[in-house]
Image (cartoon, rainbow, N blue to C red; front, side, top):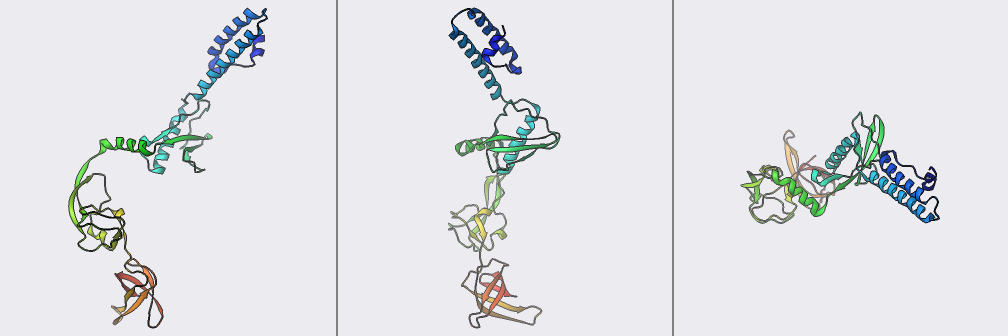
Length: 289
């Protein structure tokens, strides 16, 4: 009896032939039972059951993860791209399964990954041979989940060593210009992978603090910034002349701008009103050009 296909108006997917064949057989039995009956509602019900089963089967197939060979390279490459771009650890990045309806061919060249539209939740994968591109959905753990994941990964690698570093010899406030005696060399126990502590005293010269430091706190490079040895409006001693010129004189001038060590700054002679340029050589000291 072929009329039931017109009733249903639906052809089974090739991937689910066995399932639809069984359902078709059941429906044929229902149709034979009721073909001479006036119970058209039951026949309609049988058709509806068949359609619902078809929809469920199709939905399961669509939601199943892709298993084709090309997906593995895309998944691994997309995860590595996100990790490298945003400096993330592997446990924080997960790739959403690919829709099984997508048939991805194996790329014969290196796959290129990018985020052309600034959307951090997706990564574009492109292949030149054969030519295709796919967008991969990405999830990144944040907040407490990220902290737990990072801690879990870091725990087995956690080691500490003793290092000679520079620590504050007193309590110091943010903005303090570092002076001799403010820090001392001390042996402390720190994480083996930590490399940001100041271990050379010369790194403290001509710097100022970016944060408060309690006494006996190891100082890190990010705690310091270059200090302005000359500040705008201050009186600066400018040396003019020097070796090879047969003379050396000094004059007082007013700084027209801040200056770090070795920087050129503009100054003004308060008596003559003339401007001059000099190189900062120390605290409120400069060498004329």
